[in-house]
Image 1 (cartoon, helix red, strand yellow):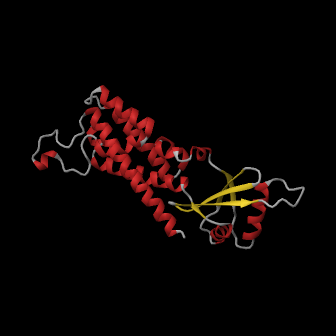
Image 2 (image 1 turned 180 degrees about the horizontal axis):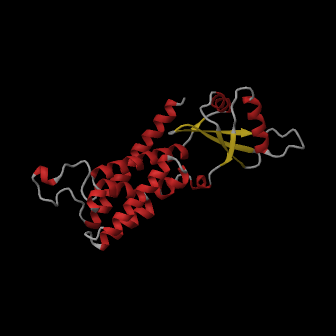
Image 3 (image 1 turned 180 degrees about the vertical axis):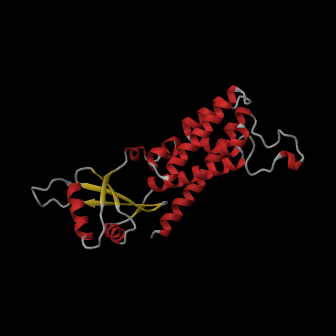
Length: 239
């Protein structure tokens, strides 16, 4: 029963969900540098309606999303000329609302998500993905996939306790273990079944603790290389 639930189709779907959530978090951590004019254009054309804001007292840091994997940012320099000015964020919101007036756009201003403070660290800890992505399909999917993997690790008593403990530690401490586990356990996903190849059942199966560490290392290398290429592609397409 456990093998059927955690079969190849489930693993492929889970891996695609985790990769999608990884790319979505990449877009948030490395947003495209933009301008206020482009923000106004995106608002007026209804490509976005939610604007996240934060301030250091003299500047307003702004971020918004126009697509699942396209996140933009700009820095607004507040012009202090009015002694009665309520604050930099209020000033920024007033300016933007004036510029989109008449377009039928309703702008919602929100503070940055608290998880934003983790910066690039959030990429290493995929258990943070649901917190960063919220109740989006990718956020919920990443959470469900993580729980499925943890459940499989705890219930699959055919693996030695040291191997299960290693996988659980890699998953919870780095997050990349979730990707590696789906790819490597109980056998490498891209490989055909040992029965079809006429090989012994042990072929294609990671060997113990060293196999878990090796699979994670390869997964990290692939995700880092793919992530760098993805960020460059998105930034180049947005210029």
